[in-house]
Image 1 (cartoon, helix red, strand yellow):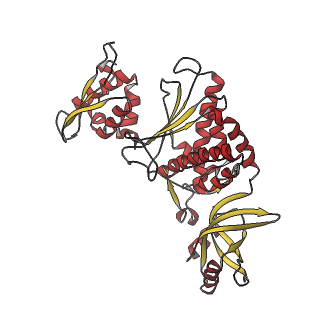
Image 2 (image 1 turned 180 degrees about the vertical axis):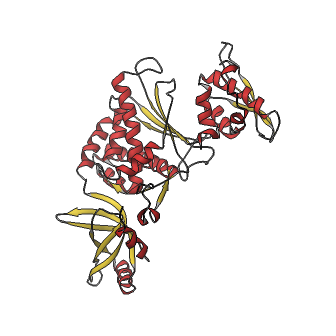
Image 3 (image 1 turned 60 degrees about the vertical axis):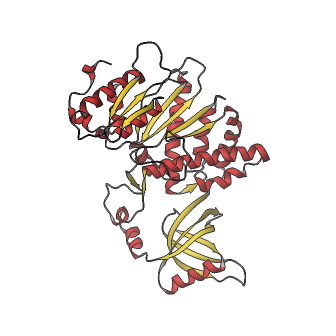
Length: 405
């Protein structure tokens, strides 16, 4: 790359994050060869070819030093030439000029043709799989369901519209996306300022990306369970981990041509690693999908579509009617739903201990927040397998519900 193509505004280079450059160097196979702590680090590219490409660079670490801009210009010049990435693309990934450095997701699929190319229909499938993965994870962040359809769609598309599409890289075929990390998303459109939007729970982009990985890991485990038992029950159990018909369809689309595929997430160095998710020494998490999984995933897509009335929800509501349990048996209460479910009323099955808490809520004129498995049976909605229950003051919740959306 000609140095004339580098940014002329020194402030752009001043805002480049050295930690992000270090991460990108590691991703490209560079290794640190020395440093002067807090001042600069020296890097080399092992096994570089003999085509005259540079294989060493100096990375400045202290933006206050007078030579920072010039050294950063030289470092990015080398990196862009070796990586064959346009300078502008590097700056969007590495600099603060993009607002924040998002988590980088790379969907990779083996291609029978030369590296970096793929048949047009297969390429369209790749982009569909990536988009469906992001949308499914966002929908699951709001509530768990075996099949969503249009449910949670507006929330999911607000997240998708906040993601950036990156360039494809050479190496089979790769689709790249940058997902926001700190930006928050609520169930309702924030441009509509009401009591409903003021009291809604918020989820960060990082939380959605983390759930994507958890759900795909659970998908892999459900496939393994099927291979051992010939039972799709593992997918039923995985719904509470974010697996859905749409998530299974995204995984199936990746391997539908019986080609191996993988998803790699390079966690944003500005935010740090994800919580509770294994990663490599270079800050990556990779999930592999074998082409042999295609038949099982296709069965799972159809199976989960039959469970459309089952979802895992966290609801807030007022206890209206109580059916006292017999000694040692579960009881049932009727919940007037304020938020968390499309059902206006839920019949909730509670253990004796949970039932006692519900009766106390009635006496105190307080609401309950419950998490469990929602299912429609004939004309009624039921909440069973309640995993958490707590008494809350929900007058604000009621006011938010009654306010216009």
